[in-house]
Length: 74
Image (cartoon, rainbow, N blue to C red; front, side, top):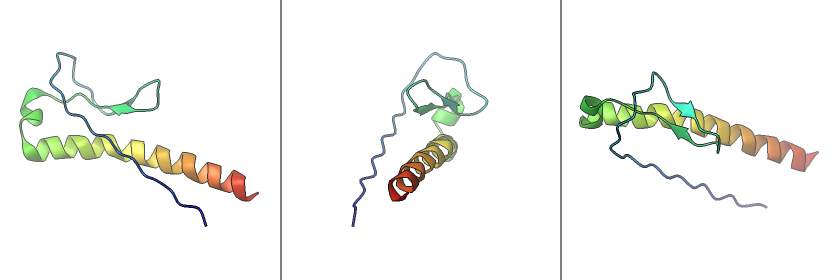
């Protein structure tokens, strides 16, 4: 039976970019969400930002994985 490795990296860095209305997908498949300074300095708002960014990334990763599994089994 196959084994699968799950890897996750989250970086929170200060920047001068405009805030985003929602997470955006970058060309390389990663997701990015720029939040305002107040949210970035609040543990609760920061956590919400991380979770909002992670959700589409997780869904896309699972979808890609399941597509590969499906092709492998057919």
